[in-house]
Length: 167
Image (tube, rainbow, N blue to C red):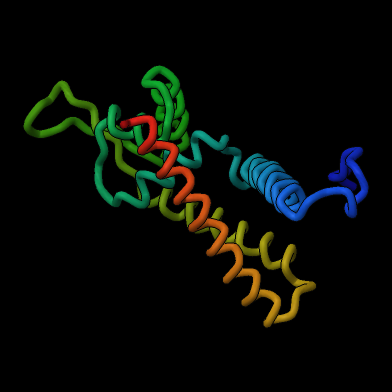
C-alpha cells in the first residue's frame, strides 16, 4: 500500500489553503506515478516523453516539424530525436520529408500509434473510474465544478505571472 501522508501538523493547525495545496500536490504526484506505471505495463512499454510526443502528433492530426514538436512537448532537439527513434522503432510514428524542403524532417503518427493512444486513454479512464467509484453522482458533479474553478484560477495566476515577466 502506498504511503501518502507525511509527518505534518494536525489538520486543525493547518489553514484551508495549506490543506488544498497538500491535496492538490498529493493528487498530482499520485496521478503522475499511477500514469507512469500504466505506461510501463507490458501492453504499452512507453515513457512519459514518448507518450506526450505521440499524443501531440495524434492531436495535431498532421505531420509536424521536429523543431515544432520539440517546442510543443518541451523537449530538447537531442532528447526528441531519441524519443522519435524509439517511437519509430515501435512503428507508432513515421518520419517524412517536406515536399517543399527535402532537408526538413517531418514526423507523423501511424494508424498503430493512433490505436495505442486510444488504448492508453481507455486504460486511464478505467483507472479514474476506480478512483472515483466511491463518490455519489452529486459529489462527482460538485467535484467537477470545483476542479474547473480551481483550474481557471490556476490558469489566471500563471497568465499573470507570465505577463509580469514579459512586461
